[in-house]
Length: 276
Ligand code: NCC
Image (cartoon, rainbow, N blue to C red; front, top):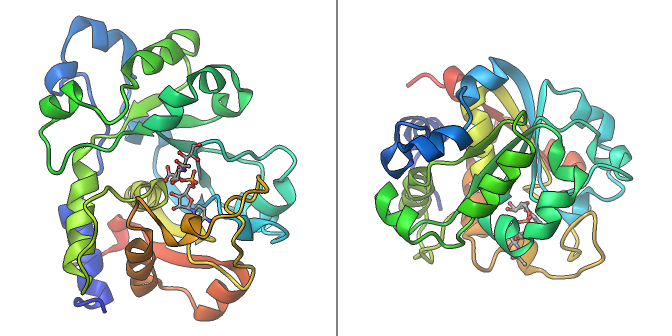
C-alpha cells in the first residue's frame, strides 16, 4: 500500500524526521535550573560514530529465539522500557547501549524507575507523546505524562549516567510520513517506542538490525518475552499506529524475507548511508 519506492521513502525519513534531544538552549529549558539537569554533552558526542547497531523489540516472539549472541555481536544495542536482560541473555543478549523509555513508565512506575538497577546501564532517553505538531513550549506546559520531576530526581541520584529527553517534534514528522504512505486513515497517536528507537539508531549508526519488530515464525500472542501476559494488541497495536509502522519498516527492509521468518530480523541503512 506504500506509495513511494523504498529509496524515496528512506530519503523522506532522512530529510523530514529531525531526531534531536532537548538541549539547554531549547525554549523553556534554557533556564539555569535546567542547565544543571540536562546532560552537558550531546548524544552524538556521547556515543561517537556507531557501526552495526541492533534494536531489540520487547515482543514475546523473542522467547526461545537464541538470538542473544547475534544481538551482542553489534557495536551498540537499543532496548525499550523495562525490558530486562538478566535471565534472558540467551534470547536477547546482555549488552545495553541505549534504553528508550516512555514518559508513562517514568511517572506511573516512578518508584521502580528510580530504584531498579535495570535502568542504571547505558544511556537513557525518555519520550512523551506531544500534541500534534505542538511547539516545545506548548508541550512543556501540557505533557501527556508530567515526567519532568521524576527526570530531575533520577538525574540527581545518577548524575554520571547520560539521560536525554527526546525532542517531541520528531514524533509527528514521522507520523505524517506514516500517514502519507498508508491508504487508510491512521489514528492521530504518536508512533510506538519501537519505531522511535529505530529512527534514533538510523541516525546514529551505519547499519541497523531490528529484532522481532516484524514478527518471525515464533509470532505469539504473548506480549513480552519477559512476562506471561497475552494480548494481540501488543504486536498489532491499539494506541500506537503499530501496524502502519511495521508496513513501512517492511517496505524499507534491505534484508531477506527468510531473515524475517527465521530471526525476526530486518536490516536498515543508517541515514548517513542513504544517498538521495
Ligand atoms: O510494550 P512496550 O511498548 O514496552 O514494547 C516496546 C516496543 O516493542 C515493540 N513490540 C512490543 C511487543 C510486541 N508484542 N510487539 C512489538 O513489536 C513495539 O514497537 C513497542 O513500542 C511503548 O511503545 O512505549 C510501549 O510501552 C508499554 C508500557 O508503557 C511500557 O512497557 C512500560 O511498562 C505500553 N503498554 C501499556 O501501556 C500497557 C505499550 O502499549 C507501548
